[in-house]
Length: 166
Image (cartoon, rainbow, N blue to C red):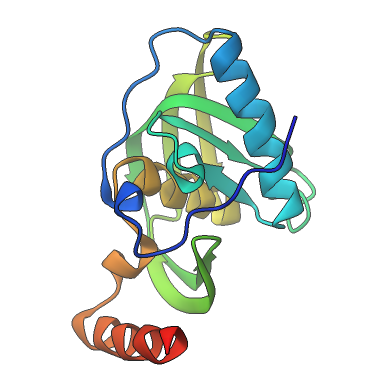
């Protein structure tokens, strides 16, 4: 296992839809192990494969530091099959360090996909775990949390980001 470099906004790979995984082979197992180590080292509550430059539909999530009922989740080819309700909460991203904003997301989600061994899984979640699932699945579809902000917030983000880059 090794800690990988986290790709930062505005790198192109973060805007590209990732490719489905057809086989949970040893290469995918190594990727998952590296992603877990990278997420914990960051530290973060979730990481998508394209955040370390790999265009595969793999994500790891662990919100247990903030929600003791949860633990490590590995999802391959995840998709949201149902969502309901709405909540607003602060959100950040390892690929856009030092920036957070309040976003609306679904309160509850049902996600299906595969575990690290290729076995089908279906997961129902709410609160922080639901938010993390939505955030990471967005990543796998080339969507960043700043894309979900309103127009005015986006303008403020762009100006602030430009100043941070100077």
